[in-house]
Length: 438
Image (cartoon, rainbow, N blue to C red; front, side, top):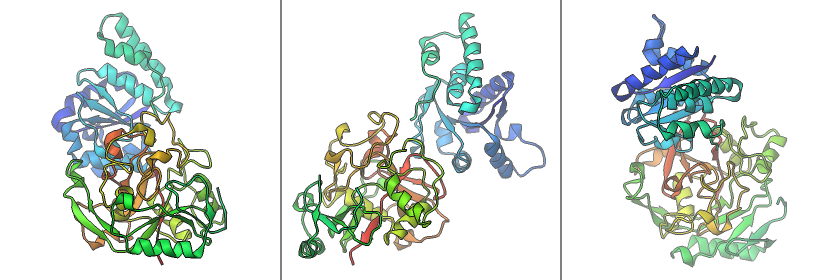
């Protein structure tokens, strides 16, 4: 027996939700459909939270009204906090909410309840996968009887039962090649010259020669890219609504940013000295040189603090990715799947950091598009926001940047923004650190 929470909007999916719940109950499963399934005399928000906590799966009926529903948004947030599997069912090809782009969704017609049943079966956690066998037998029997028609159901029965998933040194080092294959010993004069050039930089992307440095006091041994001062037009008028209006940002100070996302091996160094908290998940990333994922905003910040650094602000992140020229992608204005790790070439997991070297940004930062989403320090506000967006309280959602190996090309533009609760643990989220020029 499985417990399934159905999230939907009554304005345009009440009948689908009720029909689905009735079918699940007929199969001896527990289906929760908001107030229809609620005990009398209870506070409804507490009851919803408890039902989500007890569920094995949340089925989200995606419709135009559900995308606009605050109640549905709260239910999704509860499911994410409780690390529940969410199965988005796009009714009649309704658009998927932006913050769920990393989750594999299924498109099903509103009157195809049996099709939804099969998709639920395929998405069930392994310890309840016997549900799949029952569902397939029932649907197959119905097919034999001629109760179901059309190639869509037959194709679903033929698909897999599994849901589609998705060098350390203590010596200071500097390089001045576009994307370094090796490092040379740092020379104090070279570092000072680079910093002087960064402070006085006024050119475009191609006028900057990437410069890299490993700080001797940084126990992670991570190579950092120097980002010069300058200005750029933040945001886009051709993207999602939260990317506009475009507004000019002046980067008065140069700074450093990690060349790659933080790896599992680098984070382990922080764990070894008990300066960081153990992350709870590592799906899609298990090798030392893959990016750390499944990390909260707080854990990411603690790691950067351990290194004497900080999470980059949203402005720092976008400037390092796009530069004064305001590129669409870190490497240019044309999408090229060979330059990043995304949904169509990821093979179900992250890649080692820096694997797509041709996708480097103008300062030489790698994987700023794809592989894993990246936490930034900033609170999520509409553009343009004020100076209070950097406060360290935990009372607001934080910005994510860069897209991940689960995204299509739309979510991989350097202006794309997403937001999520800082406590959330998600397999698609990692981070990198930044450092001020002292």
